Image (cartoon, rainbow over all chains, first blue to last red):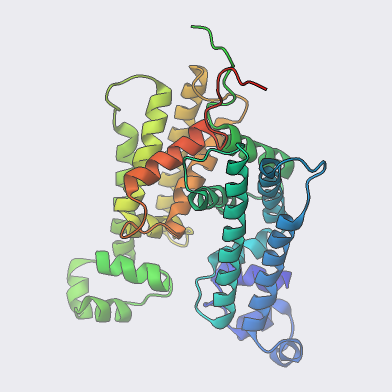
Length: 187
Length: 187
């Protein structure tokens, strides 16, 4: 799977043929067809892996269980970690454009993920932990826009550690660029 | 240009041949070659347009001229507007992977843009308007990660107005999801 996903990310899924997969995997085409029905099945398994990992984060319960706001912060932090751990799989997922049944299903699961995050944002806003002057769906899109943009430049090997990246991203999004304001500023 | 850029975005630049361009433009291939040397020149003009628009924002001076922090906020807001106005051109720019001389030059200009934004973040931090506990280059990448992610879902026609989007995005990034905290919270 790792090799196939790497090839898809390098050449684009649509631009990758079974010939190329066979060469890079070091397997005959008939060996590949012994395991899967074709490249679409490989795509389905790969993006399913990324989606399963992201949905699992929504079901995690932060310890200690506190507020909806803490859950949201946990989801953001853990999503960065999933993106870093499953980088090639998440990259493939985020490039899917809906050109086949498998891709359409993946887009539908991404929309469901967005809905669940937007619901969490709304609950966090209702308890006063998140601003309520911006639509929760827009907030959800901005949050995951920031997280998803990491695939464009983040490489776990040799860069900033995942935990530091997850902390900085969560800090900026929750506290803002201005940072925590002193409670009674002088001057 | 608009038609060519639309075709590139739909089919991918690498997947678009002169045959397809000729059909979609309603021009013979020899007519196209009368104007440009090939599809790479079209790509260069198109992504140059997006880059020029983004660099122009860096040279704008907000009115009234106040602080470096205000300049940074202005750059964020205006970048959202450029992205919305030049959506197909910016989309094409952001998908460039460096597969040719033209694409390499575009990636170099994007890096230069990032450097200039990071410098602005550092100046804003030096005057106390932006938190100084996160590397300015990382902040620059998170900011433009959020802005650039808009190409994935934002469509100016029939959605949230550009000015409202620019305000919400800037608000979330500068003030944070928690919003402005009351200066002396009770309880």
